[in-house]
Amino acid sequence: MTPQSRRGVCLVISAPSGAGKSTIANALRASEPSLRHSVSVTTRSPRPGEVEGMHYHFRDMETFRRMAADGELLEWAEVFGRGYGTPRAPVEEALNAGYDMVFDIDWQGHRLLRAALPDDVVSLFVLPPSLEELERRLNKRASDDPAEIAKRMKAALDEISHWAEFDHTIINSDLDTAISQARSILTAARLVTRRQRNLLDMVASFNR
Image 1 (cartoon, helix red, strand yellow):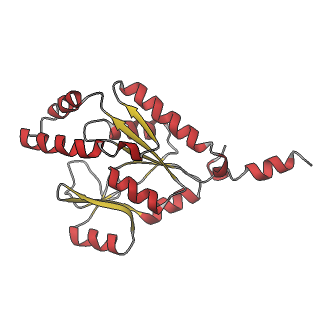
Image 2 (cartoon, one colour; image 1 turned 30 degrees about the vertical axis):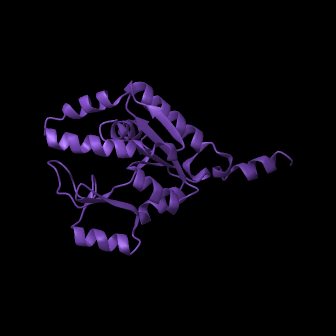
């Protein structure tokens, strides 16, 4: 099936910090070069090695809030004092051209993205095997101090409380298994009958 024979899928992956959503999303992108990546807008400063337009679109808070107010963002949120959002135009262009996209965003972003693109979003929530394991993973991040970890653990409980809003849920106790499960969800979404534009003509040709 060529990308142009169907409309693209928005696979939204959400999880509390440390549960592995970015790792899973990056693994899907690495295994499928045609999978498009949405470059987010952020108000945080670039980290070493990050390139404008490749990793993020870096904007100040004033510009970010103007973009949100003008409808230039499909979804946006301010998290820990920083703004993050998804530009509308490149996503709509990619989907219409038949390309799939993966988003690793929080539950609020999922709500907004689903409201903006209700027929295109397929969502996945990633749970850690336990809160103890989640805290252990956060403690492995040397740059985070105890106060920051405590804040993130509190935020994790809030994030987890929204798991039932998602189409699919997996438990990331084994990363390879979690990646395989996420890939299966994406494959199934691609094969939904209404997404496949070529089927009507193809089936009609059987009667000729």
